[in-house]
Length: 465
Image 1 (spheres, rainbow, N blue to C red):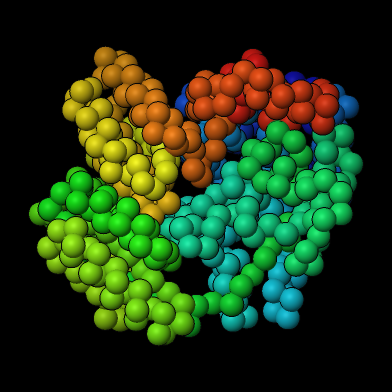
Image 2 (image 1 turned 45 degrees about the horizontal axis):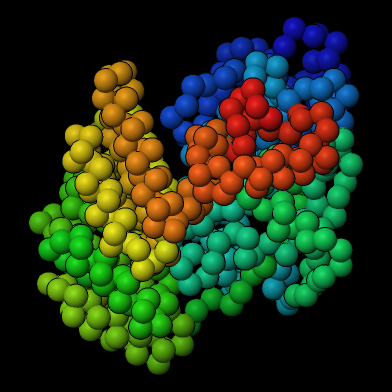
């Protein structure tokens, strides 16, 4: 940004230490975890109070500056890539307080920059449970989780971030404070602005405080690993478990390529000759856990599971789940470019989707490791490539198109938890229709008439707000 007077005004509002104007400092905020071209922003600012955040938005609005909010930059769809070299990136890690943790009424009030895992630990210390557990939880922020409606391993039974947002305060495109929801269990006062804001990817407002629901932790758990010779039998077992009205806490899938890669990375004792694994945990009342665990084991055996290993200790259980969380970092070591996709289908269509992904990998001669939240139909086909190899990368792009065509053809969706951002906006009309896109754009144009809030995301390219 060349306007020194404007930089000075931001420094007056936020303090010089919270304004990054040098290009070397701004470079780090030009990209996120999506494999998309970076854009160096004009300025990076770090408010440390709601008042500073409001003033920052007002100043951006006054000068028509595009504004992109960024937590930890773990976004996988390009949602936190600046829209242009004039953009102001607002970093939320200075808004990182747990304002209230109420064990009596089972809620917490947090600022958007609180790290997800830190919040879950703070709740656990009070004897409470915050279930959403995205794979990036050790670094991702709660504000980012809300903006993308993040899921996680426990989403099958406990739901996703949306299910735990009771209320919030946020600033509109002019910096005015808007209040939505409540600390009460029930609240139907006015429009349901909370649900509108969850998953809005920074297009409609900027969170300053979030009220999150907490629940009592389960009394008992049992974790197990079911080993299959084929991905087909593993996926059929998933469908059978759900069809039998059993909802495990977690029901995760890994194919053989992912199993071998994770074992080489973690040395967790995974069976490298297995065609597929299901990592399963049931929780609840001890009698319920015993009953459901027995049923799950029997269903897996009926679907050709050749072995079922039950965790005998907390340490063994944690090793199982750490192996699952290691899937992405383990795969990412193998090639210069890792593209983690997020295709989601109805659970009954899981066997068909896994089969389609396998066929697409063969058709385009690509390495695709597939893992994911099988219990809710949310798969993460992970393509390993080198973006510098233009011929191979053209095959990658064609494969991605077919993966999403397959998901939509099976009644699925473009994203179960990663959002749309820049990466998937070109597919949006395929899932919805032109009228839906135009309706959404009209809504944004009214709430953000200058189109400064994360422009170009979700409904079009960088030049299409």
